[in-house]
Length: 252
Image (cartoon, rainbow, N blue to C red; front, side, top):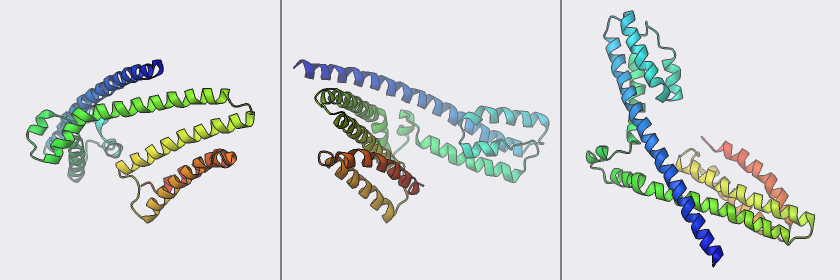
């Protein structure tokens, strides 16, 4: 009874801590996003003004100030373009930069979590997405992180008690090895799921085949641990390096 109460108490404390941390990070992200949108749109307007100006030094100084304010928020690709801006920049180049800025502003605006933005949206999917990000995302992520933290605590607790009941040093080594493999496999599955969510895995038969085979092989080797410890432990650990190497081949 005391054990379960302790688990419940730790879970509540972890959930509360994770929830506060995630909420604070989301708030800071939205504040930075608002600043980025203002500065990048300001830079776009200044580029258009500079294009239609006499391109005197005073005009260039204004453009440079707007550029410096926006630089921390632009993508790496655009930052390389902005580093090459000079007072004799061509109108064609200005139009190109304005187009790239438009695309980046659209990308940032689509990720803006604002109730004001949603008032002007009649898209049901956008409203559902907003409700998830503002109401459910923090709860979901806090619950997931709490579960992961408890899982690690239980794994190390199990490891401590299991090692105390194992006499052979070799068996102790293989027990530690299989637990390490389980943790690595857990993160491997999370990595694959994250890559799929971000659409960074190449679409095709070979990608699906590799992922399915790698997961099935890992589960099979883990299940064979009690029969062939060296196969489920050492060989599987070495196999992870090959799995990660091959994973890079199917990532965009």
